[in-house]
Amino acid sequence: MLDLMTRSDEALDTIRRTFPVALGDYAMPAGGTGLVIIDEVKGFAAVGCGPLAPAAPNAQVDRMIAETDRLARRFAGAGWPICVSLDRHAPDKPEPPYPPHCLIGTGHDELVSELAWLESEPSATLIAKDCINFFIGATELGADGKAGRNRLVDWVNGNRLVSVVTVGICTDVCVMDFVLTLLSARNHGMMPTLKDVVVYEPGCATYDLPAETARDLGLPETAAHPQEPAHHMGLYMMASRGALLSDTLR
Image 1 (cartoon, rainbow, N blue to C red):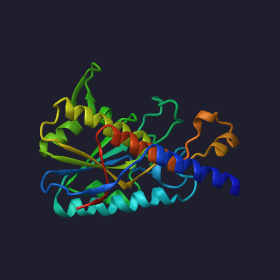
Image 2: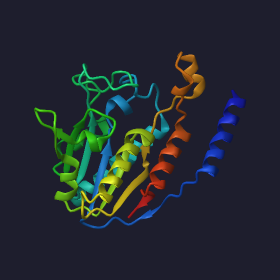
Image 3: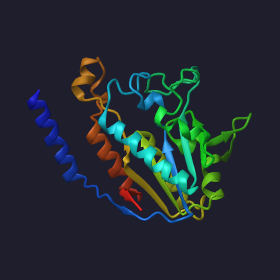
């Protein structure tokens, strides 16, 4: 076991040296900053709440929830806008390669208890999504299946946001997909006032499935997802595409 831990630490050190990530201080523009919280629902972040939730308490996930709660209360106290995505699925609409999760009616699609206060917070806008990418999930579909307005774009433009700060789970999956799409949409001119797309690292987390655990579960090697390397690579990919990474927000 010690040898495995040593090799894991060495691999993480190699990844960090090969794909460097720099976290910085970010001054949030007053009156022009919004907070986006990605999928901090029970099905992803509450122990034992479904196949994609932590099986046991997890320090990175616990830190994410605590930092998100602290940051969201700062925004709410200042009257700054908050947008919350809720991963929510109909049982007859699978999302491969993932098993059924955050199903409507199970309670797993609800915010973790620490963030439940956001449901009645006047400055918070809650939007359910049925796919990995919140930007895509915020697009409304008409009865004919054609795409209509995008509620996330409306939220940014309605608040004339200069900056969007993002937190949530998973760093390298839902958070990354959202951030990369938001960057492209910004560059495409869909949100004329938006300048900065910021990822607040202490408020992000991902899941842990080491290679040996995946093998023990009978899963293919490609299912392996060690938490710290995956978290780091998610941050690296977002930064490499133009997102600002921060560990201190002023």
